[in-house]
Image (cartoon, rainbow, N blue to C red; front, side, top):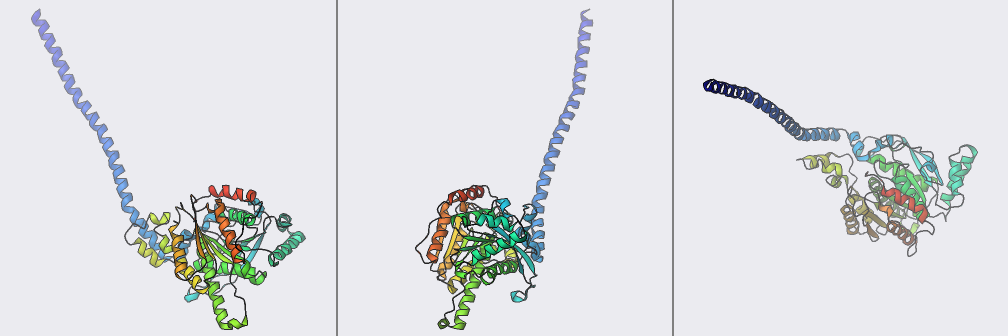
Length: 438
């Protein structure tokens, strides 16, 4: 009996060992299979990352080749003017974006050749807003009537023109906006409301070719021609004295404004030399120049600009891009040219200390360039905690402009207009929410 029990025990033990032996490979196989899946996924992730790392330079170099071969493609990145298809607006109704006492103006710019034998500029039609000084008698009614059409609109237009021509009509700010903008989007209304209310001045807001509802395609020469056409519309067609016009450019517009000021100064000096000082012909110089969030040149901005930082570390990219850029916008050279031609012309630079789009070092370099060339009335105001789009959120910026106007007009300075705070508060709050365009 005991022998039988021992035999049965040995049999059960053998069966268990066989079962364990059979089960062990199955478990090991399952564990290996699971481990293999994890390894496979890891390998796929690694391969994908390596592929992206290898393709990134290829895409950058290929894209750079396209940009250098097609100047019109460069305009897409430099100007970002196609943002108008996202930032839609009713350009004929300034009141819809709370710009009151304003009218829509159409400006035709004829075709003309470009300097240096480049492609001729096409004829375009530009959109502009003329904003009356806040608080001017009848400003609100004139703005409403200008959009009404018919006889009321014609009467309103006559009032707008009369206000511009009036000798005591005050300062007229020709405002030139940055890229990715138009006169009805964010920075345009912010500046129009703040300048009109705080400085009690007219504001002419221009949309360059390709921006807003203006026809054509932007180029550096085209933007310069458009700004000059707006200047002539004010001074030659509407009879505004040049000494009443303050040029003001923001970001991309700072380069356009600096070029316009330099060209006007050169023309005024040439005219003076040709006629002789005894003739007593007044120089056609603007009241002054304000450059807000300005850059020295597109070439020098490349490694500092957010998009440029992403590609300029690759070998040869910065040099190739700088050599082949159709957009130069060399404001460093322009402010020096301006200083040599008109050293007494006031130049004010405004820049936020936390500007991540265009570092404040660019404005410091522009100030140094102007002073080195002989500028006698150049200054820089750095706004603590202001970024690329919130300079006007600080009253200090508008106070600096008011002082420039007062001194350029023959006084010791000026203060912000009484009662301007309510009108300025809305732009300030809106400025803090503005986006990151240039």
